[in-house]
Image (cartoon, rainbow, N blue to C red; front, side):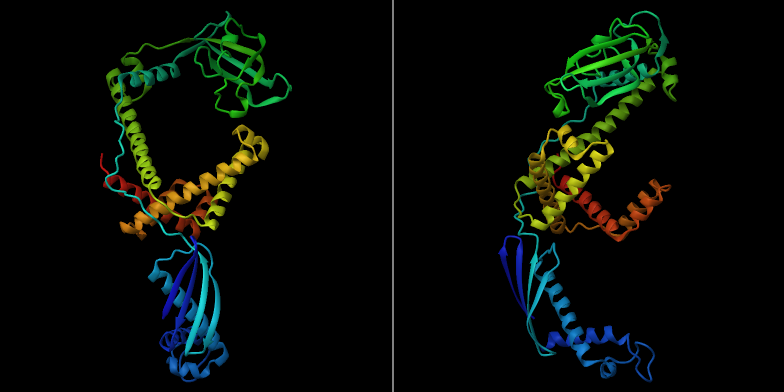
Length: 428
């Protein structure tokens, strides 16, 4: 077999393959074995006759076609393996010449991963953050537990900072009088002074008594997390249903015993510190891994195949639309909540898709160089773990059994192992 490979575009490959009599003899044998299962040869059990005898009972025209197909498939796959071409679409194959069992020439057009120029991935100058838990962080967690275990007593007096009010609230746009999505609630417990609502909201409720109604206008902050609400003037109608005085428990050994299986306050503090240390270590590790990946990707070059880009854009839009449906919003309403319109969304989706694909291809190249693979045992362990987690969800069980989802899991595990290897190669 001889072949010629030409990148007619950065991600489009033209392969020309020429096969001789020897190559076609191998294809013919493969075709005979495949077709023999459909015939009965006198004197032999099904599929047990020698190929030379089975051939005599086969339709010659069908054998020619099957040999050609076997040759095309086998020679194309060998070319991919030898040249390390990674196709992302089905090939377009055109037979230029075929003389049965003597000679064959065909051309293949296929979109493939472009040539990857991998940047350095060892000895990266990426700083790892220190994972240290301060006493003030332990104290903040203690205060949160303290508030959770606090005694709440209804009072008839007017509310003060530090009290909890139970409210019903509705927010509308002051100009259009239309309801604001997510700006309403019933029996909501709000601690005055907690700054859990937009600035100024809680202040408007200081001095209110149970049963009192209040109405006020207030602007959303200009840096508010929901883009389309930034700076908007809203009008809120509030019904104060109850005012509770919050009495915090004393931070002592009795409090620790109430908070969990602890003998004293020191044990509780030590447990909090352990949990915070573990969580911060995980956070720091993830941040460092992301920084390593970013460093490699930013110094690498790869042409992203158009078909991969289009598929990833579709996946991103599906996620967006599912989020919109979950929140009960139309597509345009959801884009507005994200501070986007159709044009800016398309630019964002394109940018995100290209970044994801580039990252995946770069990490895949590292996995190949470092010979990182996922074995059968690792894959089975992950599948079984997920099936146990969703033991009562039949739909999820079915999904986890599908070949395409198992293949996706294999890729994810390999990706995780590659990032771990990247971290090992860059200890800091």
